[in-house]
Length: 109
Image (cartoon, rainbow, N blue to C red; front, side):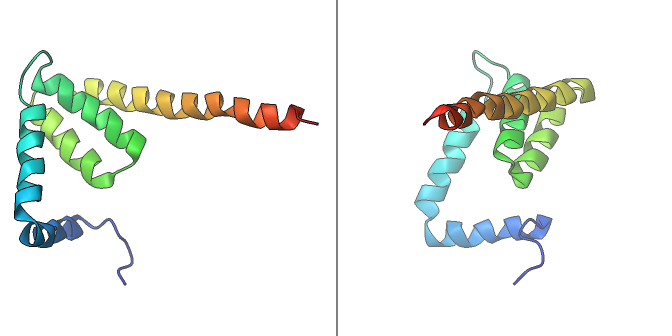
């Protein structure tokens, strides 16, 4: 077993998934391409959203890829930092909101 499940090289294993189910993987890739194309939101804004979402889902591959794609789309380091901090706020806010469940449990007799 590998020491780390998140090595940069291990993402190449997706080729096996493509080999096994090419039509489904290609459908995802086509969808992904359309989602990130300029539309009502620019590609840059979409990539900044993806950077924030990747930090919330904690996918290291997505963090790496979407940060690079955001930079390519013109995002600044300051914009990336703000997107990351938005994600941090949402994660923290979610924990705070879920504290209501614990408080309700504490109050039950």
